[in-house]
Image (cartoon, rainbow, N blue to C red; front, side, top):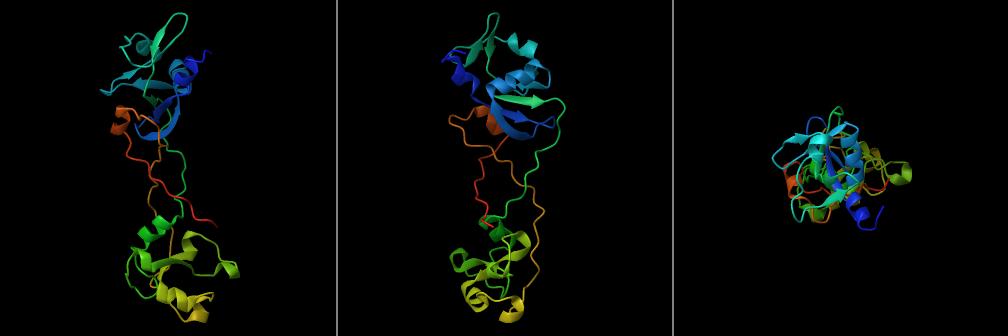
Length: 202
């Protein structure tokens, strides 16, 4: 592989499932392999789909990326769609600070106060010092006053009561597409900006 060809083959291609939902970003090399073996088709900006043979027959415009083989001058696809895979990769809804604030509606789960983001903290119902874990059913928002009162105590020890028992939301996690330099314009038809959050430490 030449040094000029390598950067093109490792470039990003958006992969859609058969329902045209984005599921991941793969390399140009992987995308072309899928086109060649018939498990995927290339998608153009006007939503037309192409088999490998049809894609190879397209004319390469000036200033657009391409690769050359002994017999072909091949356009580099920006998007491919799978022919059979219709699922979305299993992505757990992360127990992040942002998601807990959203689930609890920016409200203290002990007194019902809504003092604002800066005056709210995440409380472990069963304190970590007593074996409590950082998970959906053990974490709630608490205002500073309630958090101070509860401190390192259990609910029974603190005298506090929950407004409602915390549960894991049933939201579908947003598809996350890694930030890519010079994101192809056609991607915007299929994905929104990436959603970045860090999972809370257990």
